[in-house]
Length: 491
Image 1 (cartoon, rainbow, N blue to C red):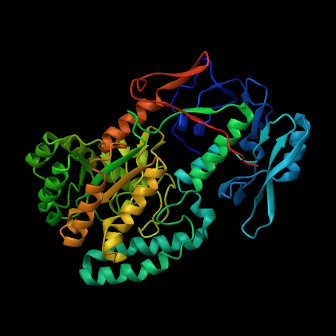
Image 2 (cartoon, rainbow, N blue to C red; image 1 turned 90 degrees about the vertical axis):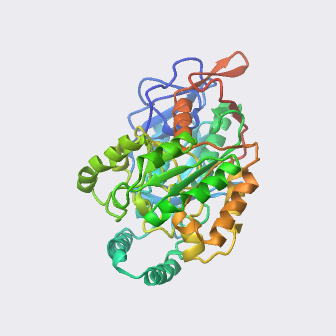
Image 3 (tube, rainbow, N blue to C red; image 1 turned 45 degrees about the vertical axis):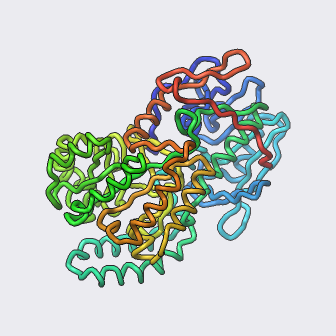
């Protein structure tokens, strides 16, 4: 399991101490220190100063990954994709560990059968029958798809889709659209992740935080997702697929500039010629330039060998354009491959999108790390999907998703294409979206590279106890704020 964890767990006065690094705590910058060794060889633990503990199995003691669901008293039905310790083995471990343990929540399989339990001791300690970091990894990396769907059928379907993308340039435009619309009917049948939004991972975050508040008997501090008091983020990006799209930039730039907004433009180095003067004009105007693959032929990330073959060309373009960001054409992606690209950030993972050639999604509306690369998920439906494939007529779907993200403190990162914004209805919908939020002071409106830089400063900052208060230190201290998450009933 490869997760991005920075080397900075705290040893100062913190709320928790853990037997190992805990990525889910790092993600929210929950203050904890690392102690030496697990509770037992088979158990990891997170301790509180009051003596209560959160326990979970070490990898060696778990079984093969499975898909189960846990339903909380709040009504959340949370899919868990991880190795799960069944009740008898968990009971044996907890008996050896000591204490009076009872089942608090049941984990059920696909057919509703009982599989395992979350346990709670008489002193308030809690045992999870799975590794919480493995749950995060399964969502961020999309490895859950092998369990949520038939793995062999999914791989066959994916191979057929990418075969289409290799030959689509030979098909007339109307034939391409007809085929995509037909296939979209099949894609729309996918039940998980939900579209246009999937809350499963954030429901799990809420459950985990509620358990931490329960065992610590106090609100859990974390660093808020956005700087300077903003409560959500709106990030504008564009992928320029063709020379026709390149020629249509000016009207979109004028629209955004007139509303006081900026965006990032991702170009394809070897599909059309991008003049250096155009790059300088964008940079001088406060906009950003990124790399959008090499040829836009759907093959850049088909294998490690292909990445290594094409990477020099993409890196040359990045150096020439002073680009630090990457988006893969058709959002083709692979967890182990993305860090090989050497960019500061990637924005190829949707939060949820069944309609892309590589359906699925990371199920989060917040940035996250893949090794040292920051991932900025695409969280808004794409223009081509909405207006060409699904034949929407206005901005309703965009506004509904933006409001969903605004209410939850997420990042509304949209990817539009000048190739399609030339259509009046699409451009009008985009205009309505921008006009609605251009003056929203609760929204942070950064460039993608600014989001990535902030997420790194946040990751290198920490929360420390100072008397009865929590204070911030580190590079984000002047712009960040501490959130206190109150405990909620979870059992």
